[in-house]
Length: 122
Image 1 (cartoon, one colour):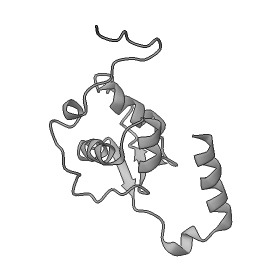
Image 2 (cartoon, helix red, strand yellow):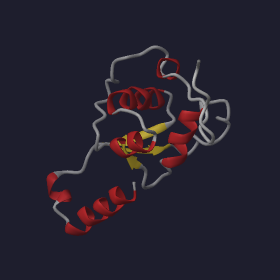
Image 3 (tube, rainbow, N blue to C red):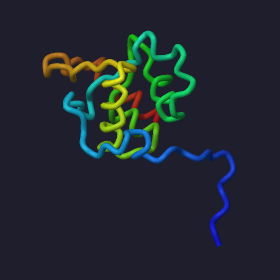
Image 4 (cartoon, rainbow, N blue to C red):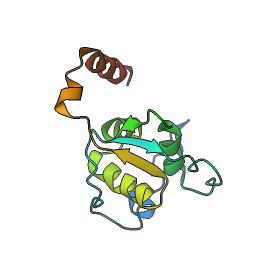
């Protein structure tokens, strides 16, 4: 007998459908600490996008955005499939990415405390 759906949980689209069957990460070199932001026009006229794409775009508003690892954690998805999915969004022009900060930028104690606090909220 099949398990009944849990209340409050909605059916999610299968990953291969979201990525058009892709299984390899994009050529853009997204890493777990790459910062992702939605483009300015990502929220306009994209109501037909899969629910997961809309969720990602909503959680990554400019100018701050979110790190790939944080997006994956919030979406309850493993890192590699998330990188594939973000690569698809990047190629469609719906998100931008910024490489991780240089080592000199990450030695800022206030920045590290902010990261710690944000991770604690997850």
